[in-house]
Length: 103
Image 1 (tube, rainbow, N blue to C red):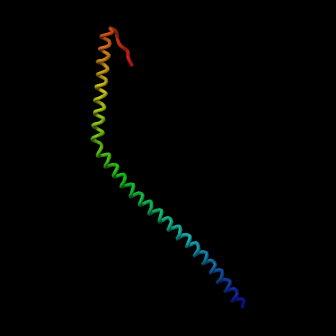
Image 2 (cartoon, helix red, strand yellow):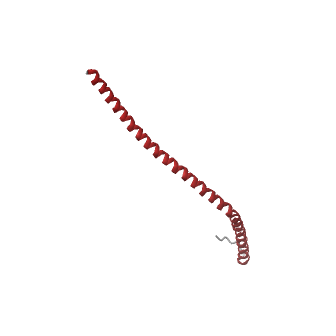
Image 3 (cartoon, rainbow, N blue to C red):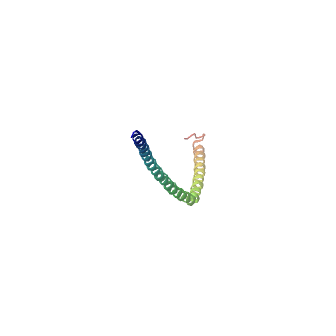
């Protein structure tokens, strides 16, 4: 009878340990699923970002000639402005008779 009680106690302790392991396994499985979902979301985000990056790079390439033309036109306009200021300064100096120091 004592052996039976000891055996039942041992079986009960074993079942409690098994139940605890099963619960821990369920928690780990749930955590794994959460991590897998996060991983999948990260992969999808990375794919979307790659597509967006490629689209932006394509747009940059399309606008490079326009940008180069705008920069050239800007540089030409600055040269014309500098020349016009010099001509105006020379005319003012010629008219006034002394060097003109304008802003």
